[in-house]
Image (tube, rainbow, N blue to C red; front, side):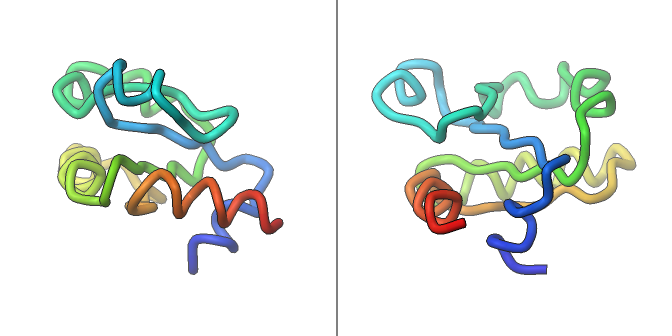
Length: 94
């Protein structure tokens, strides 16, 4: 499933894994901010979120790591959305 298809699902949860200061400088409307360093500690929170989970950051590197961490803990329907600006633009095109 491509990014626009994921974003078009009403149940999708958007998670920005950048640091709070990066999030404050600009973010996707409606997204949650859970920095990469907190992802493993927030496992229960991620488990309770509606799926699909779309993770993103500045360029896709940190969200790729976060996606792999969550998948390794057994979470399914977790996707690396790449850079936050691309996610924002794709969401705005819907």
